[in-house]
Each structure stands twice: as C-alpha cells, then as structure tokens.
Length: 232
Image (tube, rainbow, N blue to C red; front, side, top):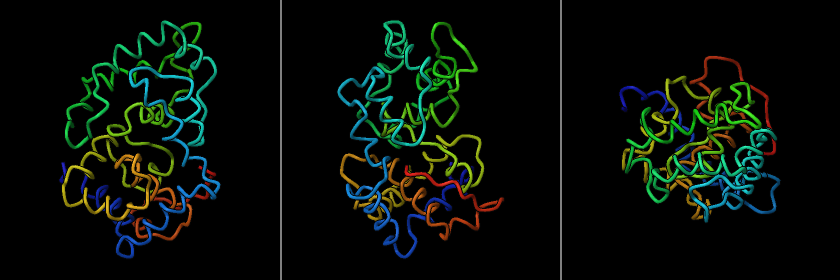
C-alpha cells in the first residue's frame, strides 16, 4: 500500500512533522481551543456516539460544523423510520470500536461502509434521487460522524493540496497503518482532545496548514494555491 500511495503519505507526513511536529501541535491546539472560532472543533462533541448504528439529528448538526449542510430532503429520509432502518442495517455490521489500521478490510469496496456510501448518494425524500446534493465531501463527513476511527474526512482541502489518488480511504489507511507514522502523528497532535480520532488529527493539521498557506505540503500540489477558507 505504501508503494501505491507513497506520495500521498509523504505529503501528509510533511505537514505533521513540520518543525519537528511543533507546528502541527500548535495548530491543533489552536483549532480545538474553545476560545477560537473554529466550528469544526465541535464536530466530535455533537456527533451522536450513543446511537452508533443510526444517523441522528445531532449527527446532521455535527456535519454542519465542518462547513457543509445535509440537504433537507436527505435529512427527512435519514430521520424517517425507513431511513433509520436502512442505515442501521449497514452500520450494525461495522464495529465502532476499532481503528482503520486494525481492520482495513472494513473499507473494501464490497463492504458495508461502501454500500452505505451508495445509499447516501441517492437518499432522498419522498423518493431516491441521485441528484440529491450528497457528494463525496458530505457523505464522508456524515460517515466520519458515525465511524470516526474508520472514515477520514474528505473535503476540498484534502482534494486540492494532496496528490491525487484513486481512494482517499485507502490512502489514509496507508498513512496510519505504519506503527512509526502512527506514533509520529500521535506525538505531533498530542494537543488534540483525547476523544478525537487519529484519522481526524491529520485532517485538522492539513486544514490549518492550508489556512496559513505556507507549509511543506505545497510543493506536492499541481495547481495554484486556493484561497477558499472557512471557519471550519
């Protein structure tokens, strides 16, 4: 997997290890400081960890903390009896208490997470609709609310600043699967609250680096620097 995603791994780790990890540590501390205006720092707190096998209203609110909104028609279906049943049918077979590097097969294309991904891609009320406004970013953030230890957040920052890959799930799996990198990420992001998953921590470091706009990852980019910042 390292051979397939080597440039992606190196780009992520370049941000994590900048200035010996002190920059990421400072950025992560700033992001999660309750006195700073980053709404994304509330994502984990709002996601419903008590109802692990269903998408609740609080999960939809949690996703909005990351700068996107679940369309109303999708939310209505997700919170309906039918939607709850369909979603739980998939989530019940995906353990919530394991990490991606422990069970990488859980992100296989034939697995329940991918099946749920496709369900969310057409989930809509009153009838399924593939033009439901649920793209990769919204689906990944909604799934990350339910399985934060298995699903990395994907958004325009990840897409724009990191090398292109065929699967961001597999690429992030490559990042965290190596024990040395795993520990390096933990050390460099030790300022994160303990309930924040290892997968989420590099995402925060990347987003803060993108916001600042002058980090080692920039040389991996094939297009010009974006200026799309948000409070996320």
